[in-house]
Length: 201
Length: 201
DNA sequence: GTAGAACGTGAGCAAGTATTCATAATAAGC
DNA sequence: GCTTATTATGAATACTTGCTCACGTTCTAC
Image (cartoon, rainbow over all chains, first blue to last red; front, side, top):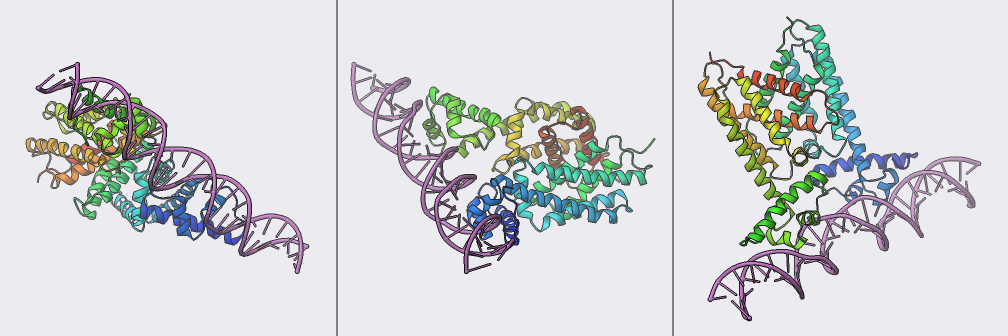
């Protein structure tokens, strides 16, 4: 951030710019999102963008920061409700929460996912992995008889990526091969089966 | 293809252009790949690109056609060897084959995967799904006692996407969280467990 | 050998877009 | 009210890049 906004006015501009970035990406796609579009939608001029962001990338980065933060909060909110349930219920609940999270801004998240290489999209996955690792670590402690995973980080890595990308792929298909419920059932089956596999000896 | 090459000379130019496209994408990334770069690397001038391809997209499309074709052949070659084995061995073999296939051009495939939205990358996945569906259909026929999946297309969809994207994600990590062998073991565990789950009543 | 077709060339055009900067408007401090 | 700091403006700049086209070269058929 090139200049730190000190007045209320400018803080609102920064907020409007980030929001406008989200909307423009959702509507036109990342590639077709220009600084002029963003400024116009935010109701300010291009110059204002460069008052607060060194370049376009920083602006998108700020948007991602906000989304990563939202994600973390969403997971944390849903977490305590799940820990008493069994593994299958937990996984199903996480999937449901995931769909709900993406639900509002499907277009935006799809577009961001399509451009996952543009650096920071990775932070999204890592944040998610970190939170899920915590969930399953706690579960494993409570149910050490049923679940004993040797390498939790790797297991979480596999499950997280499998879930996220399969769902994204499902969402971006022109016509779905099955209902959303069926997809969640199958993913739950796969993930829960995998995580539960190794009973302690 | 704007003009059909009739002389040997021009056929070589077309081939060189496609090859140069692959190399340039692998080296500089799709976004930084310009028609001028491709032409230079192919040892011809930009104009020649437009003798045979209407635009840059068609050129990349031709490259993808070639790769999809390669993929189909690779799967078909490996297929007969696997059908006698058990499910776990088959999945492990497919993963091994997958890594081998990508192995030579890791950079290229990663870069193409990063830009999966640019149309035709989807064809890649569908081709793979189609082939895998055939593999598991045949396996299910032979081992109808052990495996009876109600909705094979959906199961294959889930497994294929999970495997492909987890591997791609693994490959694009700056530092791997586990060895390639471990990853394959875990993926095998998850996929085979999932596919084998429902025994016939 | 030569005419005509196929092919190759690369400077330059057209279009788009990130970024700057001189200038103007607004708010804060006194 | 006046001064200074902060914020906003948007035309102009600088740069990239896909693509064209008038011209030169190579091949083929007769």
